[in-house]
Length: 94
Image (cartoon, helix red, strand yellow):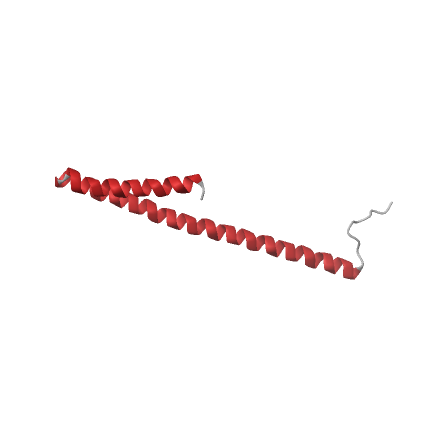
């Protein structure tokens, strides 16, 4: 897992834990407000990270599929050229 991913996961966890501590330790309206804010931001960060990972995975899969399609098209073109009697290199006439 890339270092950036680990940092995002840890940051989300720290915010959620800090929010829970704010609820219990600080108390009152200030503790409630800080706790809700910290837990909310942590959960949004965690959810965003999940969607980011899904998007990255889809992009990688799409790139793999495109490479496969390009290789298949290249092989098909080479086979077509062989059937028609073309050589791999083109020679220019003098």
